[in-house]
Length: 155
Image (cartoon, rainbow, N blue to C red; front, top):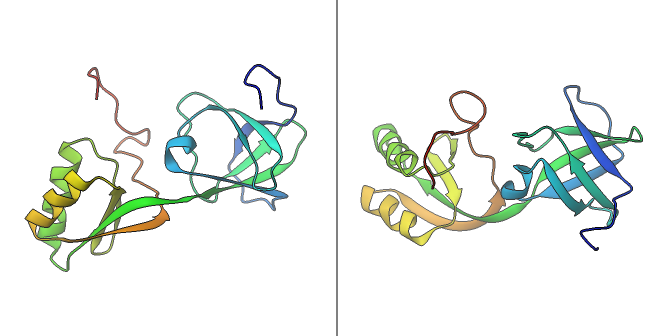
């Protein structure tokens, strides 16, 4: 697909209702953060995202196309590191240190997940967590104010 050609099927709205869907769109987390994107539905049909700036798509979100179709978003499996411990204080300490490095984190009972990075794996192991690399959907926390992390320095 040529980036200058117009896309016929356009996604223009994120829906609040859990409506029945006709199609699915599976994307990794980095692409689910884009408000403008040229991609393909899981069926192979070309589609363009035209959503408000700052939109972050989550697994299970429903989107509406300009022609009224409803599409379900799916989080694609990607290479992540999952760090585990049975010690709540150790888990909190690891979350603190990873967050202090501006790492997007998914948090579950007894585990933290981040996009795979061998340096961060080493840090988590040094803190005492067990770390495995795996393929899994990545759904990090949205941030304290719902929109993630924003302030005036480059990362």
